[in-house]
Image 1 (cartoon, rainbow, N blue to C red):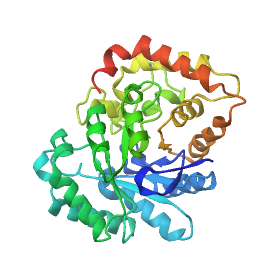
Image 2 (image 1 turned 180 degrees about the vertical axis):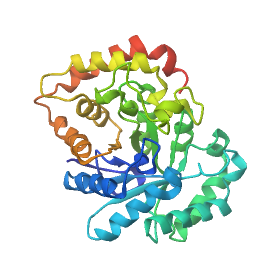
Image 3 (image 1 turned 120 degrees about the vertical axis):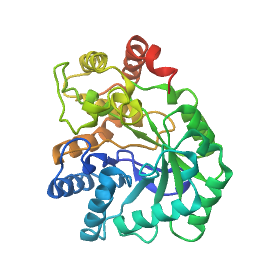
Image 4 (image 1 turned 60 degrees about the horizontal axis):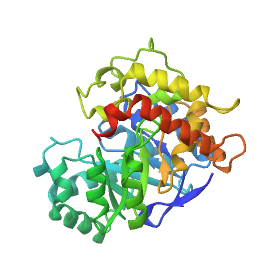
Length: 331
């Protein structure tokens, strides 16, 4: 497992992390025991980065990570969390008093006096331009409540605005084989500024697991069932905003281009972390087998079984055919 520096935090993290949205229940139920087993398997596979948010299960994901850390106090780990989505999504809610309340709640949930990295969780666009927002975040760093801060974004323009701020340590953005717009301007700007990039939704909500067909169904409480067109939150968070049927066909074409013995999710993750400027991809996992498989993608960076240059050509061809017209300009 390779490691890279997470932007302006200065912290070294694994190139494949663990996203923990699924611990909150929006992907179907996950027991405490299953969550712990996933974290065990991830760390055993070299993962040193967990990503969570205060809104995942209304704090359940943070609490499960906090419990795991108390049981494993000597494991070196960076935990990044996010704040803001538990409140009404208006810019006036992104103020110092609320930041203090939200950060203190996450500190209790995670059992940390100082949070490693706190990210604004896809706030309304005006928040990114507000000097007072960054002043309030700087104050939290100054008093030791957080070690660093970043942002999670929905659009490339939001990312670029944040990258221009001198103390933003990292940007979390949707990037995968079906969502390439960040390659154009976001990654180059982040490299130039020394800002870390965390690639979320790296498997396009499971489309790049290689297991779905057009007949695949999802539980009623799964966002892949109820948010396909942005009914509950930004459409881009579900299947990266692409049409499900198109995504299934594109994933099948992606799979057909891979050499024997290379799985679709491992190739998809390896392609992401091979992009210049990406710090880490943060796929979720619902069981230890998925966690180990995801972590194993890092081994493909060394070449051999997977020609990353040829894969990159395939990714761009599929994107131009299936998604550029509907996805590229929107996000």
